[in-house]
Length: 481
Ligand SMILES: Cc1ncc(COP(=O)(O)O)c(C=O)c1O
Image (cartoon, rainbow, N blue to C red):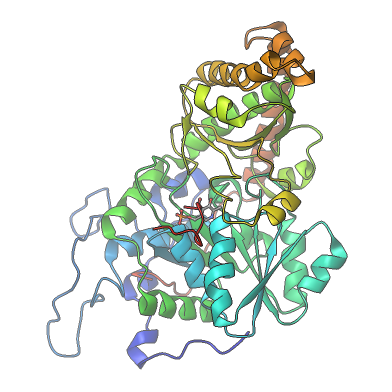
């Protein structure tokens, strides 16, 4: 690792005391969602963490304070969320930022001129962009590598690589990476492993337990869960790294505001029940879509035969609720998206409402077309984040959109896909009954995996000594939000 940031003064290195004095709640993961972090308000007995809308704090005398001095440096509501994400990820330290990208940027600020970051497979377009367009200018380079290609991976982890960054499942092709195996390989080479856990959240996957060094989140997604905020989180266990990140957080200032910190805490309380329902509907729809000839391919880690399905079952408690589909040849993605009535065409994912996105022109637009094509992101690829609506309404909506996508091909002289569209079964046709059987099997399999995982770690033993708490787009920027 290159030189760490130098503290401006001794005070800069101090970890705020509220997080340090917090006793981690020991409980199973559903209980941690409600009572993890700093639970309620010991002063008044309020069951919710108060929203501390203050920029500064009275100091009783010169050189003394009550634990907080200035809200960029530390805020009690933010500290509660920072303690909560540390508990949920089974880490020791947590930090909250103004967005997922602010969290990624802070983590990448650990590195110095001459260092290289290896991006494993498909990562969020904004992560690629900040490296490619900003960190690149400061002499921090990056390389994209297919984690399935052992030789290429070994080469990418050689000096000057100081860290790897991966998302599993990847965005938008849901590629599964073996986090434990990759983190182990990285550690043996002195390379830090950073995992973006946005798609699964700690409810389904805990990368630190699998051997990763740093976890980042766009809490804008499932953690917040209601499409009403933008936030980023980091969790880690190494005190030295945590201290440097806390320094970067305070020095660069991209902190999460107290009200948004409160909303993320509130969102996390219902994360378990939401994700259970999100992923049950996603599994049902993925199986239904896969059986439909208007669709060339479905990307979803629970599908039988999906590459990485076994790894996913081993390292996560479920497949999550994001899936991608590629329209059959001739399918018009624009007509598909325009025909949707229940599912909203929008950036983002993880909210209570189902969202559809066109990666090639939205989330991944800033990736050069040649690189994008290489990654397998075609114009016929649609990413869906499955929400909490009635799954029958979602199925009918997708059926309508698939018919619209292939209507033009029929009028224009037919073709394989148009024929398939004409013959395709309706959502209530016998085909979907077969799919329903497989859905139940898949659900049972997922439930069995979840039960095994819960039994394997009955209590969240997250003892810790301290924690970091109270640790315009232009043409160049592309269309990635
Ligand atoms: C996987 C992933 N990581 C990071 C980000 C960036 O998060 P934010 O939009 O909160 O800055 C996103 C946003 O879509 C994302 O999908």
